Length: 406
Image 1 (cartoon, one colour):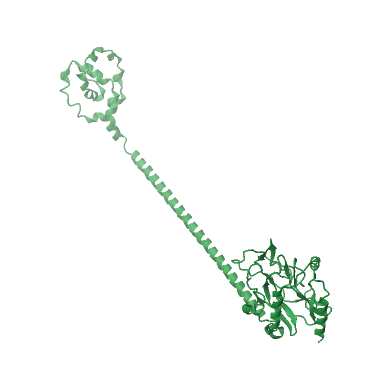
Image 2: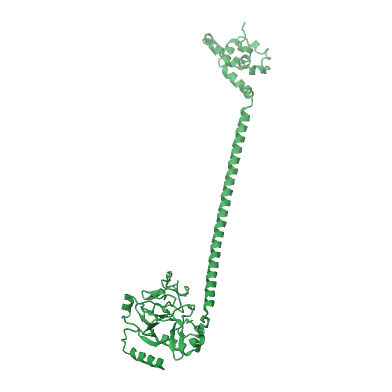
């Protein structure tokens, strides 16, 4: 009874609060609210929705859980500051949430999904469109393209305490900037948000007296859509921890498999590269070896050819050398043998002597050319036809001696 009187008194006081400051007290009681349940954020239903975290509200049957949900903001450019329970003058009073150009103070309560106790890291307005941070929001990038990925560093103590001040409460205090934000023009929760809270109030499964801190529905994709969000039912801390561990294990396993696959791919490529390099080196070595062997064979062949006796080709080529070593002999022979033609026929034995070709003495003795006294005989040139057919027999006499003329 006293609680109802206190609630009525505070409700009447709300009418004296200016509309520009919507962070007024809604209700106050002496019992602290339960801890925040652990839940998963549903996938965003479409572009333009903003996340509003769940909270404990108070009704005739005690505390009941209002699920977190995606909400369309009342206008472009505004952000949602969540409500919170705060201890003051021996009672817990609820400060309602509101829409405004900046995120105000919400008791330092860590609601998650961008609301880490101070400000909001889940997204920002960008030229009339809201950009979502994929690091803290469950966003389907195939349908939502205005996103970014920014790691969030949470400097507050991570716990599930749902109130500020008092015994066991959060000790955060508003900053100067947050105090100035409290005096900005604020917009009350939308009609969809108000209806969402009324639906939770009417559902016994959402009451703390029934679920003992584990409501049936913890979050919805759209306001009031409790049935479609049955999959987001409350889990015990152990189940949530196990789910998070399993999710982390699956991600680690996938990461390990991807890493192993990348390492195996790199190892295979390195192995192929090494094999190709070894094959090229072996090919080059074989080619070099073949080249060396061919070169050695060519050198050995050349050496073998060089070792052949030099007298064999010399003997074959000797007639030409002999013929060139006596350029003047045919002329002299023709001059001396012209008056005696009968002497040329009876001497056939001069040609069958092959040993004359192996004797180099005619080459070394150019004395037939050294007789200048025979050069001035002009009368021999008048009869060239008859004696020119017999130069070779005369040049093949042993010792290079010329026949005597009688």
